[in-house]
Length: 369
Image (cartoon, rainbow, N blue to C red; front, side):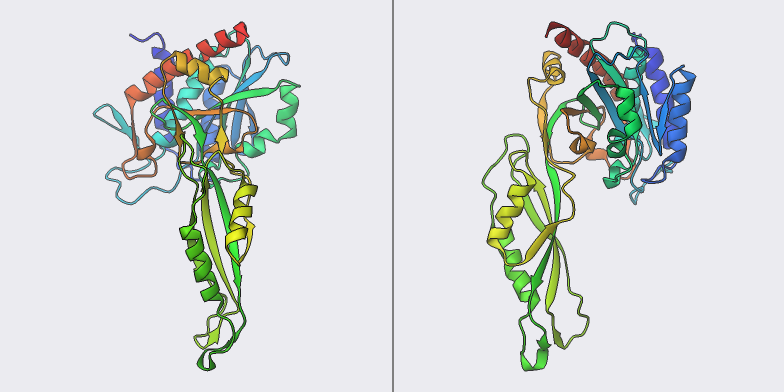
């Protein structure tokens, strides 16, 4: 029998109840209510900011640093091909099938269980705050970003510095220390309108085509050992002109750039400006690449426990944190957003035990510093 059997069972029960509540991005109120009530039943006071639920450990001390435990409770729409009802938690062969079970219900309930385990601990050298947040799947602004910038949240920290975070995502309980950033760029090729029959004007589509070819042939030189190459792909192209006999004077296209941790977004924009004629502007600079150092207490603790580290090709709420964050959790990213999404019960149980041990080792490192 596991030492943590009670909180493991509670976590699995909570996950099943979460699956039963549709919680698409921006529609998370009911699942947020569920999580809030679950914590209340454990005697834990909570705070609420829109659909974001958070709580601090019982013996919060502003003189100590704070670690954030964060994951999201929103989901994408169910993929086609589910053989079970996406909102019915179906247990088969030791796994729970259902929308959001793996991404990121399993990681979230594992972090909640870990927080509950340490909630009454008076000897921690750091504070803990659990945050179950919204809109991760759409990189929305009313999720963890809203919370971290909230005046009330900042006042509750009362000067305590956020020195690290565990971001719950399905990583097979390995340490995703780096993430590629996402930079979406709008490009506008400029031509000159004219009549197609008389071959007048400068065709903006042709200008765009030359630029797109230049982008396809360009290689960003810095290759990361963790996240590989920075890639740029044109994913959308359109003109405002709908008449077949008019040479278009402008052509808009979208560039999806996945940026490794060796580049800043500003460097990427400058390099692209040097190789194309089109005017470019970023839609957003929010989702930057990230890296938590291997000498951070969280990663040092993970290495002591034998956890492997890697670079993640996917973007998470880790990108919105201005402090070191480690992405980790039970489940497998390959199952995310798929039909019959699932997570093994054993993965959740083992994940909770590993996360508890990870914070135990982290505490020892903080105490020794």
